[in-house]
Length: 319
Image (cartoon, rainbow, N blue to C red; front, side, top):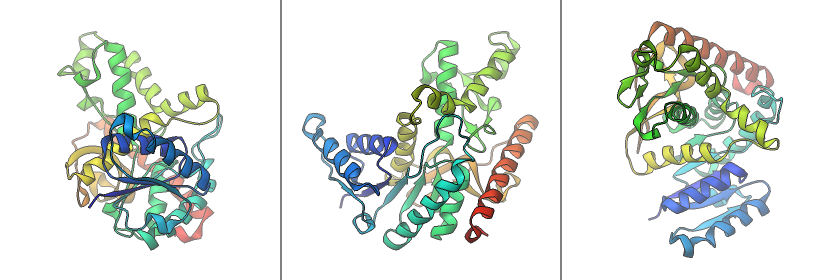
């Protein structure tokens, strides 16, 4: 029995997700969008590439939640993207309304699905989604850390002029300006980046600039594109999470997951390393943080809390 992945939102990320999932033959794909023509059109376009790329999955487009029922995985990209000058917070009011409808649709048709949320502002939207849908907390997770980590690793590889495969690092905390680059755990070709700073191979100021660029990674792309936001890298990150769940790979991935006391944080979603396997989020990995990292993580948590309080003011159902 082939698995089924539903992609809610057939915009740029939704379409790219569908294409990557088809190429990997991970599952049959349903593209869902309120603009059903877009979902149908993209599904048909990708399906017509199957003889060339030699994949064998069913693709369909729809605007009816019934067609998504019994999905194994649901990836949500529905919502409006950021426009230049717009903060992630400005998005909140608009995207909360959209997520509420999505949560109700999922609850009725696929209550057992593993749900990955990509819609911004990420940490708060994934928390709202879990509350609206009532799905188990280990089956609702947000995609951010993989993307932020990927951006950071790419920028470091450009700086040190070495392949991305030779760099190990990741980013924790909220998605946005409060994210925490884990410099204490960053290895460049096996060497700790903190040692490379000491040895003068990279100046601390330069490293700070790269961290800053990572935080603003999404905004930089928004500025170039003018209409729209990043979609290739976010889609690749979403697929990595879905694949780890469907194939029970138990990969350690940085994701926005529910914390129940880990990292001294309770009843909140935030970016931390987790193990994703066939049961969803199977474990939160608690890392030893340096004092700096601890402080920054705390700040990050505070900004997520603040934004969630703003969300509760917008919709009383979140209280």
